[in-house]
Length: 151
Image 1 (cartoon, one colour):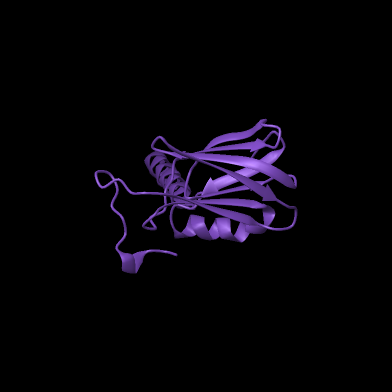
Image 2: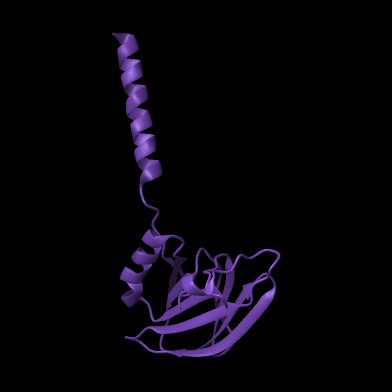
């Protein structure tokens, strides 16, 4: 009887562990300097979850190669009009969304040492989308063929 109980507990534990491992990952909203932001979008499920939450944010950044491949691990810096850094983060996927007060901002993003900076204006109640694209590196990237590219 005691052995069956241990086996039963072990089986229940394994089912619990497996159930946890199979649960979908949730993108976590972080708040820093009164700015809420989230990133992700690796995989269809993550992309769909972020799309469903887009109305909560007013700035969306999208990271791709010129050929259309999505990119992750992009360095992101958001500064307000006075130059104060509001966010310093690394995007977990090709999408980065932030909720900012209406105003002008500087967005700086980096991929493998290639930095891009842009001035953007956001307003409350709308979603401003900015696309950042980098040329592929033939030694490390495998660009999509033209028929598979997302526009």
